[in-house]
Image 1 (spheres, each protein chain N blue to C red):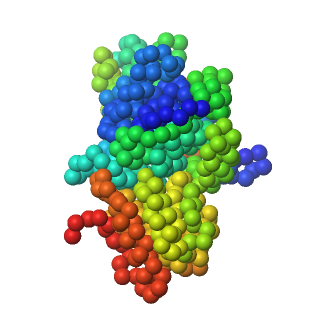
Image 2 (spheres, rainbow over the protein chains, first blue to last red):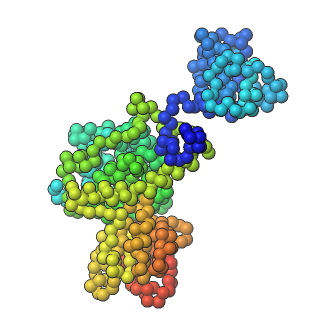
Image 3 (tube, each protein chain N blue to C red):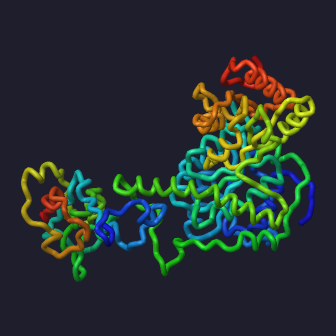
Length: 132
Length: 391
């Protein structure tokens, strides 16, 4: 929206699809692309940060040197973290199965994770955003 | 300014030396190879400041040129035919990102069957890519167009990649007289590139090539269409300035003995030279023949072309590429579409010269005699004719 409340048109934006704002990918919640969800077993985790290094979507949440959860608003479910984890503490599980189990807790909301600054209106993905 | 005997490829490589681009990324392909080969000797001899990138394909040549241009550099490459085809997806990216890359293209047929000689199948296929296309009759025009292309492409109202086309072998390897400008004159004419945003401008960071779905893609394509509408005026402004340093005048097209002509041929690139001889000859014989040679084909200057052709009795468009649509070549389709609302001359199309097949004065004279018959009878026997093919 522009200052006068009108939805921006083609004359109002930089040419060539240029994005002049930093970090705008944070607003785009790619978590609902996911087929498999990484489910983290905190008890087995050694906090070695291997998953954090490998995650291509910056979706491993870390505080004070320890892994604290997964940002399910952005995690696409690629499974690299589970593949690389030396402690085998990440399990890739079908979203459809987990949906049937109706997870309650929300890792990112509880931990104050950097969730999307945008609409945050995707009830589907926020409903899915479960911890373990 | 000095007059020299020079081939089209040599003239274009001299223009590139004078432009002194920041980056040239190139891959050889006949009949373009000489351009970047000669240019590489300028790099080796220290005559230019260019970073010369030898790449493994034309796809990479255009990719590297796009990266350099996005970084703020004045970036160039050159190609022909199959190499041009291999650049395909990157051509659209150069235009979509609004990068003012300038590229000489030496027109050559596309395979199959394999052929290294001239026709316009390569660049005509990219007429909807968003690139500006300038066509050149001879070495002089290729040289002049390339220098002007830098100013056109980089103009703030335009910011579009621009290709300068000339005929393979006929012009690229043919020796003719041309006048080259002094280096300093060219350099002050083109000035420095001053992009509003670039990858290396860390004070004004910008993301190039971000994901653009149904929410914004349409708006960015609409901007691309709008930029095309600014091109005509910029081409004419740059031509006026270029005339001051060169004494040579350019427009959107050249009208040769066209004003009072009743029968007109429309053509672009080297065949225009042959057609001028025919027009002169037929005028001596009393036929009111004229020629329209298109210089700016993309965007298509339809209003001006209609104004120049309106009122003619019969028009033949000569295409050196076949659209394979069964309704004629690409230039014919555009000219005829533009003329739809004009007081109606009869129009016919001739596909000629594919794969380097020569077109001669007798054949073009034959086209004019066909037009004379159409003008007299009002009847078109064949809307699309293959000129010079063996039956």
